[in-house]
Amino acid sequence: MASTERTLVLVKPDGVRRGLTGEVLRRVETKGYAVVALEMRVATRDLLEQHYAEHIGKPFYEPLVEFMSSGPVVAAVVEGQRVIEGFRSLAGSTEPTLAPPGTIRGDLGRDWGTSVQQNLVHGSDSVESAAREIGIWFPGL
Ligand code: IDP
Ligand code: MG
Image (cartoon, rainbow, N blue to C red; front, side, top):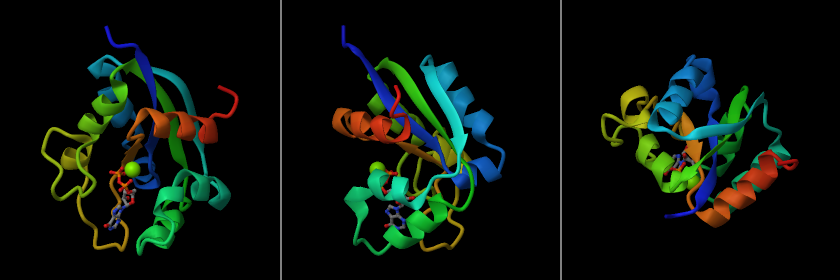
């Protein structure tokens, strides 16, 4: 049996503003994953620069940091077998216009004409990213 994994999930500021935090966590929990840490906070630029280091220099980087610090986010550590790919599957693809119905981004998101895609959630994309991101958001864990 595959060993238990942990992933970092963020409900982004658009999700929190739209009152979808509970809906996102509901999908995580009804899928069977466990929320093992949870916090609402406004992310500092410094934290976001660490979190999104791989995107520095891309055209959407500045709008992304601006957007992600525009209001509170809900950060969660979620646990379960294969949860990293499992949550990415629940979230759907990056562009909400193309994310399949049934996914968080596909059901709840759309393009709003902004320079950065406002797509409701973040989920770590690998074991390495998950460990790095959980260390950034929950250093005490
Ligand atoms: P992911 O969140 O699906 O893993 P990443 O490629 O890691 O997508 O990009 C981080 C975030 O940056 C995305 O969730 C989205 O908000 C934004 N983003 C990514 N690519 C683009 C783009 O081409 N245009 C506008 N925004 C983008
Ligand atoms: Mg990513």
